[in-house]
Length: 263
Image (cartoon, rainbow, N blue to C red; front, side, top):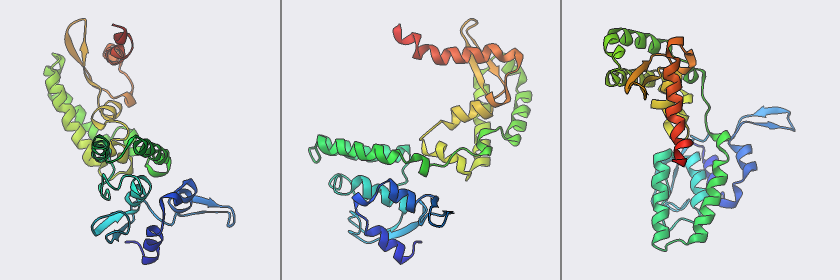
């Protein structure tokens, strides 16, 4: 929990106090030209503290919030959206932000806010999203290379189901994929590199991570009308005999987005 001094400092902030300089000096590691040293930030985004009713725009006491959510509320909501949403105290992943925006859309439809308010919201939102390089974690080594345990389990399952997979049984292949995805999620739980996947901000674990680091899986062959199973991931490279399946996957993914639009 924050000290009383740090808590008081945050509560004293105004919406206009929050700019890039404030973020750089207080929330990210930065270079101090006077000491000529890299200094740690005063706050971490996840530092927790409590709020009494009205200390922000909260209508009730809040036993636990964090610095990141407080900055979001202070910058985005204060003196703009207070009539359409209370203090937003839910971690800001893709789903949570969607619910937040539903409140704003309802406020716009019901004339609680007007188009100028909505435009200002978008301006504030786009600015704060521009700070993603200071906020978001990046991929870690564990999230960009195949996991040895998962690959060993993949080889075991592929061997056990070899007959069905040779017949192009896509359902069996998807079952294997699902089991391997869950295994990878267990091993990567708590890894900072999972933040981008868990937030919904970038990439889909069940698709992007799976294809890159576990298995490409079943790919429809438009010539035979059947599925073929590509057993490798992109990170491992292509086996010569599986080049057609990978190529078909590229065409099936790209055609509807390019030539298909003309059709």
